[in-house]
Structures are given as C-alpha cells and as structure tokens.
Amino acid sequence: MIRVEDVTKLYGPVHALDHVTFEVADRQVLGFLGPNGAGKSTAMKIITTYIAPSQGRVTVDDLDVSKFPIEVRRKIGYLPETNPLYPDMRTDDYLRFCGEARGLSGAALRERFHWVVEACGIQSVLKKNIHELSKGFKQRTGLAQALIHDPQILILDEPTSGLDPLQIIEIRRLVQELARSKTIVFSTHILQEVSATTDRIIIINEGRIIADGYISDLKNEAAGVTHVRATMSASRAAVEREVQQLAGLSGWSIVGEADNAVTVDLKSPLGSDLRRKVGELAARHNWPVLELTVPALSLEDAFIELIKKSDTARKHEKGSRAREVVRA
Amino acid sequence: MRNVGIILRREFRAYFDSPIAYIFMIVYLCVNTWLFMSGFFLAGVADMRGFFGNIPLFNTFFLPAVAMRLWAEDKKSGTMELLMTLPMKSWEVVLGKYLAALSFYGLTLLGTLTLPISLAILGNPDMGAIFAGYLGSVLLGAFFLAIGIFVSGLFKDQIAAFLVGSLLCLFFYLVGQDWVAAPIDGWIGGLGSFLQSHVGFWTHFESIERGVVDLKNLLYFATLTALFLLLNTLSLEGRRF
Image 1 (cartoon, rainbow over the protein chains, first blue to last red):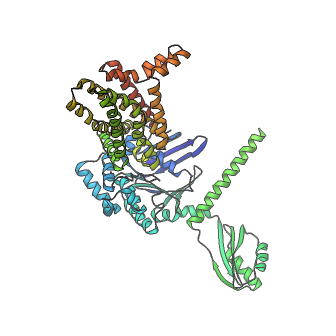
Image 2: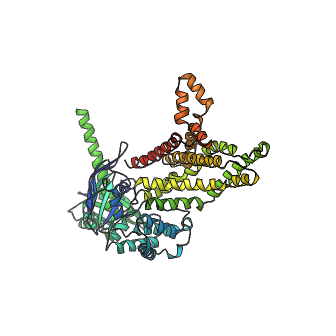
Image 3: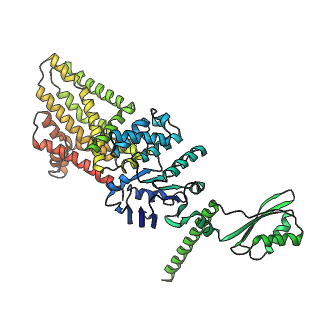
C-alpha cells in the first residue's frame, strides 16, 4: 500500500508537485499520465526515496519514506526514466551487482538471477557489454535490475519510451503478468499503454492531479460534449452558411472536402441528439448524407480535454487571484 | 561492511573496464620513475628522497583525475538513481567508492616498488626512510582522494570535477610552502604560519617522510580525510531536499 498525503515538492519557486494526494492499494496497477514535466517522475522519485518531499507525507506499507528509507527501498524495485545502466559492464555482472547490492547472495541470488533472465528474455545478451545492447535489450536489462530482488512494489518510469511497437508489446505483457502478484506504478505519456495494461489512472498536469479514476469514468468526465461527424454531398459554402445558423452547437468545423462532398464535425453540450439535427438539416436542403458517424471519445481526446480544462481552470484561478490583489 | 565491499568491488573493476586506468598508471609510473632516475646517477646516492619529493605536486593533478569519475559519471549516466535507491546508507556507498579509488592508487604505488628493489640491489639504502616515504605517500593520497570524491559529488561534469579538485589540492599544497606563508604573514601577522602548519600538508608530509611518524602528523591527514568524506556524505544526503 502506497499512500501519498498532501505532498508538495518545490524546485526553487517551481511547484513540481502541488498538494498531491493519492493511494495505491496492494496488487493494484496504477498508470501515471501527463505531459512531459507534469510531475510524474518527481512523484515516483519521492516514493522511491530518491528525493524528499518539501511538504506532506509518503508511506509505503505504513513506513514513512523519510524516516525509514532503507526499509522502504527494500520493498521497491525501481526503473528510473534514465535507465541506470553501467555501459562498460557486462549484462550478467551488472545484474549480479544489483542483486548483491540488494542483499542477495549464494543460491538465492542464482535463483533470482535465472528468473529475471528468463522473465525479461535477456539470455542472449548476458555475456555482452551493456553499451553494445540495442535499446530494447537495455530496457529489459533495466527492468531485470528492478525485479532482481523480487520486490512487492514496482515503480516504472516510462518503461516503454523509445521502444519499437513489438518491444512495447513485450514489456506490456511482462507488466501484465507481474501485475498478478505485485503493486505496480508506471508512468507514460503514451495513452494506449494505460488502456492496455491498467484500468486505474491518475492524470497529472503542472504538479496537480486533475483526474483519478477508472478509464471509462474519465472518458465520460472529459467528454461533456456529444460529437458527430457527417459527410454530405453539398457545396462547402452552403454547408458553412447553414451550419452557422444551427442552434445549440458548442463548436463546428469543416474537416474535409472531396468529390463535391463536405465533411463537417459538430459538437454540442451533453444531452442533445446531434444526429437528428444533422439529419433534419440534410433533409431540408436535399443534401444526400454519405456518412454519419459518432466518433467515440478516445483516451487521447479525454486526455487532451482534461488537460485543457485544468489549464483554463488554473488561468481562471490566477486571474481571480490577481483581481483580488488589485482590489486589496 | 558487506555493502561497502560490494560497492568497492564494482567501482574498482570499473577502473579497468576502460583503457583510461592503464594509461593513467603507465603515465604515472613512467613520469615518476623517469623524473627520479634522471637525477639519480648524477647524485649517486641510494635513497628515494627525490622520488617522494615529487609525489605531492604529481598527486595534486593525478589523484583528482582518479577521483573525478566517482560521482560525476553516475550523475551523468543516471546510475545515481540506482545507487541512491539501494538499501544502503549513503556513507556505505561513499566509503565503497572511496576505497576503490584508494586501492587503485595503492596498486599504482605498488608499481613503483621497482625503485626500492633496484636501490637495494645497487647499494644499501635506508629501508626505514623508504617505508616512511611510502607511508607519507599513502596518507597524502588518501587525503587527496577524499578531496577528489567530495568535489566529484558536486559536479555532473568530470572535467569540472577534475579542475576544481586539482585547485583544491593545489591550495593545500601552496599554503604549506614557505614562499607562500611568508608574504601572507607580511599582510596579516601569523596567518601565514598558521595556515602553513595547520592547513597546508607540506610540513606534515615532510616530517613523515623524514621518519617522524607522530600523532600530530597522522591526525592531520586522518582529520582532513574524514572531513572531506563526511562532507561528501552530507552533500549526498542534502541533494534529496
């Protein structure tokens, strides 16, 4: 169980984390999402005791990370964003060093060594120097390092960054397998990744949590609009003129134009059925409707919407703060 | 202690994972031996005073180069995060790295044993004086490497660590010299002599080399070495905040 309570981390005047609170239950897989520089890595570095929070408390299995760093580190396997490899070492020497440094020796070390080599599929590169390895093998070696002491908790900072699609699938499969017995926190900015490996996600932006929950819930929260895409056989000018006059739209745009047909995107606030409106519009003007789709809100859209929302909320907040200052 | 040993072994091997260690060693041995031998046959005396006299200035530049990678390399390559999230105390990692550098230096000094052996064959040197000289060189090396590892912990760039480390060693070298102490005494009475006897290492190194292995001289090296190792540990702890 990882508990992050009201944690703030300041780098000078910059809030890398701003009053962040969340929990990860045992054997849960949590995906950390957010644009670069949002504070994902900072949060992970605090949990792994690499850096200390400026404010707030973090506990791992009820152990305060500031008071019992060594005990906490024993429980955690950590793959930082920059893969911590010694390029001049041989892969097997490196893994043995990591195992010994984690307190393993003798038969226990041999057993764990064989397990991680098997699990991460690095048998073929054991006798090679790490700097000779491909990016994928380097990443697997980094993962093997995090797993060597069979930790209860795995913290993986962008474990698939820079890998090709096949390698990503392999790492993802491994994470899924590990998820059965371990608590896993991983960060990414690739959205398919979270939907493929986990169901709970935390979206973080500018040091604040802007969403915490299950993917399906987040999609609805982000949605707030219904969205229709229609391709009609009509002239662009006519469509533009008529769409402009439609009541109750929150936004529209022409997204394509080909072979005398125009594709238009329409958005409206939740609760009104846009398909009917579009149908009526087309019937009124005798425009054959070639295609009418309701694009499902993808995780990408949800993500972008949530980030936008949080940005405007923040601007708003700053604005009102500024107004208060002026008034005072 | 097990943890110190694990770090020590890895770091020591790391010196030999790249050709730089061999180059360092060869240069150190060649230059030192050559400097000594060039005057040896002119003087015709079977002692190593000249050799040990060269050691301080030589170490001022050689040892910061040995120590510069100790932390700077980890900071640059990202292995810092691995080391600092291992279930070990910071001082254990510091000590492991430090002892690895010290062992490397010790190994290099072992390479210079060809000189006393040759002397013993050629003449009848005072082995006690030679032993004292080696003791002084080890103590001085231990001190300089402590400076080096501390400075390396402050930088991400090895060259910067090397330059600042060398300057710091050079400071401890210079304040121990008469020609530096005298003018300082001229400006502020007593400061120059104080620095010379308590901060500079020259008098302490020389007394040990002459065979005066007393507590005062040993304490000087032990205190400063421990101080810089402590500073290194504190700077690592402080980095977290």
